[in-house]
Length: 260
Image 1 (tube, rainbow, N blue to C red):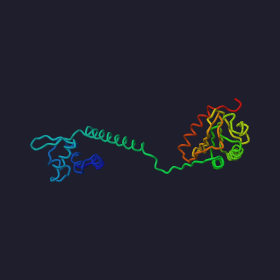
Image 2: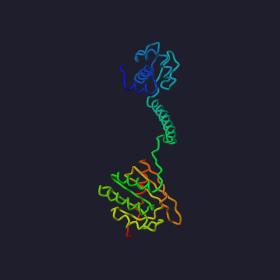
Image 3: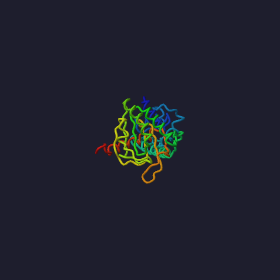
């Protein structure tokens, strides 16, 4: 009997031996048969046929009638294969759940690229460097500035705008500092930046192209931040940067344009 090799290969993937696949295929095609008939049609050596049929019976592929001679009947293929499909799917689901649980608990083993930067003398040059490398977007959020910082940074913002970079700033209308108040719209006007006003906290985020971020903090006393003694965290982590950018965009839509 000519047997479909693709079917035989598939049956072997489901756990049958080559002889077992041939014997089962013959039974499906011929109906209940004796071991000798199965061996002849499937071209299975007589010395192997009883062992082959026993394995098929134990695996639930065939049933045996204890007559003389013994007669083997195939289990309906759709029933037998569906049972194995369900078992395999259950095993796959279990493996998927277990491995996903392990993956979700794992700690990122990559060496983190994070820098702690102290003092405005070190923070401002880093912000200038970030803006100078921006290709698409510069987003600044917060109310933690000094007059000197704005005077320096707005030159870089203006240069970025000339390069076609989208520059957006969300801040308070007025920022309190130890040197007096800063009217932010007027202070940033020479930079040509898009500004929106919001009661932002006394921190600052600088996000570049959704791939690089600096977060700046300072002590705050009586609603006046001590920007001169600020610290900042910088990282080129695109996940953190893009998440912050999505929050920035949400706040941008909620913030007010100057004059409203």
